[in-house]
Length: 331
Image 1: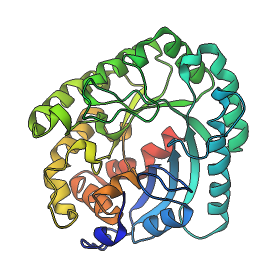
Image 2: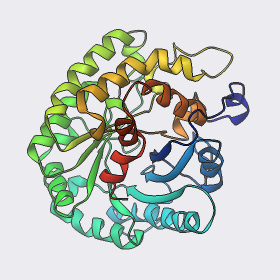
Image 3: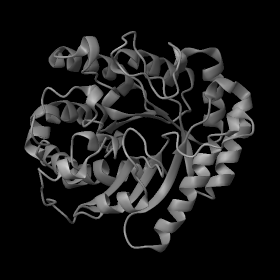
């Protein structure tokens, strides 16, 4: 759970506060979860803490599903809930929630069209796509995604059929998997080349279970998994998720959250490799808040991203911090 008092042990003022940011990945809950309660006021507290965050994109997290009605339609309740928060963000000072990505079960195949249409209607112009997580490995010490996906989800015939429906409606797909599963994403990109795919959280480099204390090996395997994805022009990558405990915590200090220099030392080389491999126009920094708030403060994350990208030309940095997100989510 995110503990603001603990995060405050490492305080940093925002560097380059004028640099415009679109945060393309955050969640929101109006009930207590394992990550705490995180509402519009909490998001504003973070986005307004010094960095120039002007727009955000909400990403599926299972919030406020409908309690009854047909099971496939229940995730539309999340879009209803976030639309209300987004409209309030339009009317009040601070970063506005400009787009919504929710969940739909793509294994419904052609039948998912009805669910997607319901999301579009509920979002009132803000709906951009869905996330159907496939994150799982054969290890009881590695958390499986909230939707409890079966193995090989992204390669099932029904899923590919549903992904084609998603693409036909001009909507994007958020791929959330772990690094040993990246081959599935490459095959999905080849099976549905018209589908815009956003790979979440650096491709999911695990650091718990059998992957604990094997960081260099994991990073090497991750690079081998990501490299073929760069050949698929329909794939972009989110650079973040680095505060998630499932990515490993051996680099953290025991008594306080990391400062931005520590984040740079641990994650900088990998993130720069992603930028150089995919290109700035196919990469975007993300906060993944409040989940990354388990270990790392919001201002610290964005300071680290600014330091990691400091040597890139201004135009490339503009893509990484805002341009790619605006293009992918049609803001």
